[in-house]
Length: 252
Image (tube, rainbow, N blue to C red; front, side, top):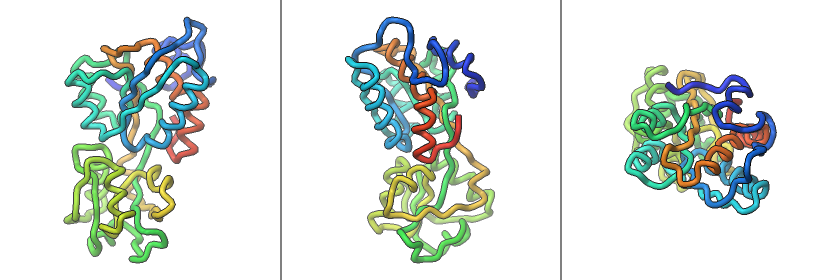
């Protein structure tokens, strides 16, 4: 079962860290070597920052982050791709790895995200909600990835039926369809829209119907289990949470 971490004590117990709310440093032997993190594409900007900061705080480490759609990452992990940490954009794809006995301990929810309508800067088509998408060209994430399943839930909640021009493998390629001028709009995470100055984000009430919880876990066959625990703790630390929130993610 995937559960949300509610207290600093719970995080410390699970991940064997000395405390919660600091930088994620431990009193145990110093971590070193490469740490391979598989992370949802929507975490790209945030985890790039956290990986660099972690390396500065832990000389002798190298954090390699591999980004893709969560469903693709889960499949790679279950096919024995070498990795230490998995950060998914939803609990469903994390459960795929958990059910295959691929993690140690229980995954922890470390942040949240929701969708917006991304349109070209200035909103030239005056899109004001999901129903307006029926009159323009649209890109959606494929349903098997978290942003796609969230899109389906929100369109159903709004009673809107669409015929998208394209389904993309992750949120980054979905947003790129807007920035490249190939579609008029796309449903993407608010964090991705916030990170791109070429688009305008349109809020809509049905977004509350599908808030994505993001879990993180240390993988059972991690080549660097010590480093994996430290990085997972770092993401949940005060600095990790502040970094996530500065990029538009919700609180832990």
